[in-house]
Length: 144
Image (cartoon, rainbow, N blue to C red; front, top):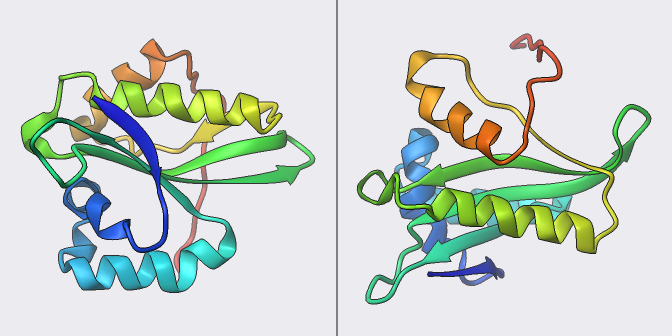
């Protein structure tokens, strides 16, 4: 398995994995336009895991770094997804390890991510706990 950052022009390689988490972006062109046309300009980056003989990524994460008073310098994982046929094979864990190494390389104080609370997310929660992430807050939101 290879884990590496995807640069602009390679975004499409993450679509298959991300579509599992973000079904609103079922069309590859919409996903690429959103990431490359809007989110990258705001600091969003992509990292992905690949296996031999398969061009699309088997797992991918979108992330950004920032600073705030409560977390200091942080790396925030916006999205972490694995293609359904590639789950439970260590790909997301390898991506998480890459993210932690990148956070350390950048001098970040913390790594953060939010995850939904439905029963369909329990396997993801086990993965996060296994990689040393803890539930530290409730996230509140309001649609406008």
